[in-house]
Amino acid sequence: MNQKELKELIEFLIEKDIAEFELERGDVKVKIKRAAEPVAAPMPDSRYMAVHPAAAPASPAPVPAATPPATAAEPEQGLHGVRSPIVGTFYEAPSPGAPPFVKIGDRVEVGQVLCIVEAMKLMNEIECDVAGEIVKKLVTNGQPIEYGQELFAIRPAK
Image 1 (cartoon, rainbow, N blue to C red):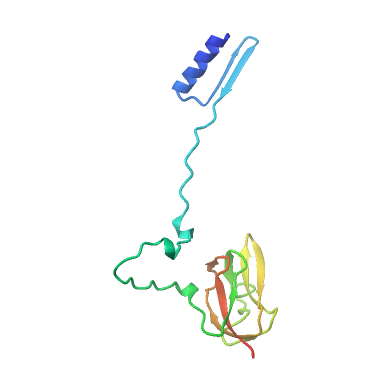
Image 2 (cartoon, rainbow, N blue to C red):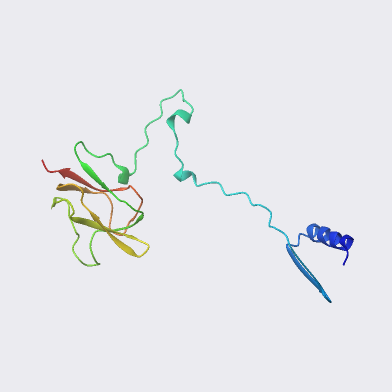
């Protein structure tokens, strides 16, 4: 196979949009692989994009404030929020049917286990980082949670 035949073969493969071709004639072997056309990357999910107030156009009419989701409730004055250090699934008890680690109204100490967050089949104990009283539990048992999501509101001890 000479250079002219090879060039014609390549042009034919491009024209017919053939990505891979192999030819064997006696002692001559030809293998041609074409790289795939670059595919445009999908647009990122807008739910995870930050929107800066300065970038939003000003509107002449007042816009009512959006109600924040229940899991992102603003903490009351003086309450300490315990946040998830990882993404996973929230569990309030060490096993199904067992009593929860803590309940609303319980007194907690630094280092006390509050819950478990399962991530990749690993059970991660989430410990309290402040002594005080559990005022609110902000997630439900078995709920998927995000990194930094507030799990408990604690009134610190004086």
